[in-house]
Image (cartoon, rainbow, N blue to C red):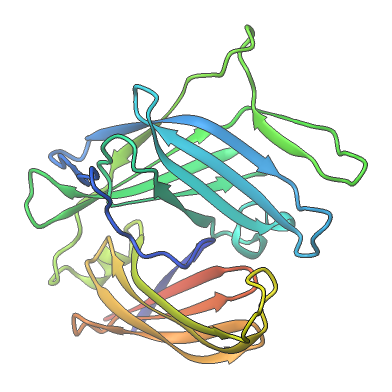
Length: 288
């Protein structure tokens, strides 16, 4: 038996995707060369707040339509030493982008990740296929970031923003994404799936927290915390998982994911309640 795995880290795990009025979440999916585009409006990186001891850097970006309408606001936090990579490793930390309600959104979900060391921003979005009823599409892309950063202030803090043009104007930056190959069908060989780009859609997030009466939401005193339960959909294979917490190790909840399709693939997760990061790992066991 050959075992393969893929993993994902999310910086904003508590996400239930809802489509507000005006979000059509549909695009044409014909042809693997199909491409889409977002305009990058603003981007700002803030070093960790010296008044806090969590050491978290914050990256925020806004995505606009071609006419400049603000469509999505994206925010992620991670320990400064990670520089956008989960525990400083090889998996980027993906953060959620929230639909602003302005204009008409064409996507179901939008996420972003930033390789801060190399100043590269990655974008991923999913949508219903208007020309393939009942199917979904996934598109990904990236853009290099040219930024200006302030010198550290007296308290050690600093920030970075997009570099202005020679005339002092805001630059016009477009992020182009390309449609990924359609999901494999249930009868496709296991090995075919493990070689494809893996992406998961997270839905139905639920976490029950009970705090002491009068407890501050900023520094709450918890009576109980159920840990998360949620649904995962693999965009490459169509596998659907129901995930639930089974235990806790310090501040990290762990759990398994049961396949709703009856397939042999398995998945598991770790949720760090202090960093608010969710790590997903999926395994395939293929006949050798």
